Length: 423
Image (tube, rainbow, N blue to C red; front, top):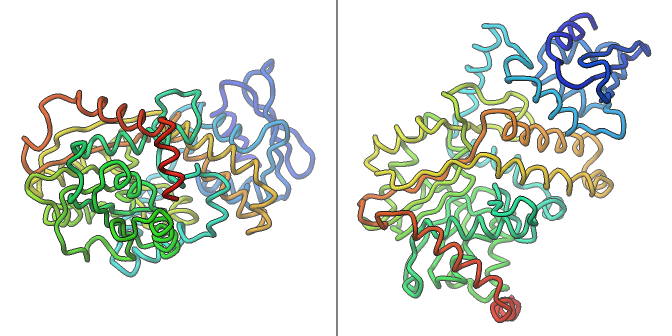
């Protein structure tokens, strides 16, 4: 306990943390008069397990029930409390050897050749359909929502996200029929169906998650547009036809740094000369570093979160022009907080689907990711790229105007009746 005690005494300056060890002894940190957040260790080895590698050890201790957060607080309160104390390195400083090992491990984990890329995707996305229904919005959008109103609903924010990305693809109203759109990492099909519904364009969605592809095709069939909106279980690198627009939403995180040139070179080949591509990804505000070891191990094997400089360098090397770049800071924090709330609300059902350890793992993942957007260096990037600079207007006014037009259509009563009839 002495090592963990030493770390916490150096770390906790704001608020108050009270830790009860397995033997009943209490340790207090921070401001004596502040309301206490209380945690408990349930066995003799838990403190050392956490102290040896706080980033991984804390998550594992919570998953295994060795670290318990006492009511009325929960693991989200605990993570946000710890990370609000300072930078990631001040919270869990690493020695040079461990830092080097993390970097090497991160690089090796990014060997996303085709077979491994499919395995990595299936590890995360091929959980049961019911599980994702319990915490996502009704359209199953599993990427950052766009909160035009921080007090709005998740459904409203995810609809706004789809409208924003559609607007950045620059499909003129009334001119989408006959256009072909490639949706890379198409998820459960919601965005592809959204584009077809509003523009009449043909959409090909590609994904490496078998059940996502099955479900997306079922949705297209139910909507009566299966001849126009298709989803295939295929690596984007194996697509060989050309498209007028390309969207990649929440997929770039899985590409891996050494594959960035391949990604942008391949999409360059797939896009028509006057086309537009939109790449939406989680990124980091600071220069490159190792990806989080706990997340690599338990949640997203093979993932890497880019700095804007890493993306822009690959874009430039492969011939593209960046026509628009938007950095979104707190939107994913709000999204993750709502996913966490819904996950926790369905604890009993999730534990029946899997077990208590899985439930705690998912809680830790969502809360940890949220703190990265609130207190860390995580953001979202939307890179709009073109081959010809005249493919989009000279100012950004068209983006807001088209997004609002799409949202007004979705809110119109007659549009809802049309949509219900189609479904």
